Length: 229
Image (cartoon, rainbow, N blue to C red; front, side, top):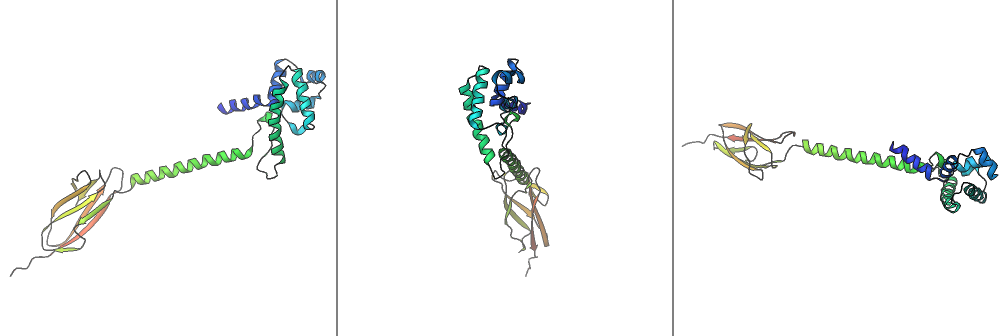
């Protein structure tokens, strides 16, 4: 509906639309206009369609417009100003050799093809950028939180049967050591003592947020039995 109203507005503001609207409002037929202005009917039709390709030279067109405007009691000076703008557009599109522009009758809503293409390109670009942004946001949402383990080092050998796990994760993350929930401070730092057994101990430290994958780090600690004298 909005698009149709825009097209109606373009038609009414075009020179041909103004002439045709006034003639119809006065109840004058094309034949009657031809008889009373001595302008051939085909030229009147071309004027009312702003179809300058089917009219003689510019001087003749301006005379047609002045006579027709006087006949319809319209301001010929104002209409000639509109004509100059439309005729300039007509000449530019007519002389274009690149094929970028295509000339269409103004009364049929004269549009330049190139701006429409550019508009479609801009719309497609905006959609593409929105898609990339949303994809990036979705990826960031599902991205596992950061997790750093400062102690112990991996493959550590010790005779102690307990060890302190020290690390740091993204704020707001849930931290698990061997599937046990650990409480971190406000900055995401945590420490926890765990018991070890003689031999190889595999410690699983995991961190996750809602809707994200879990980030897991393993630490192997070898506990050797302390020799006694």
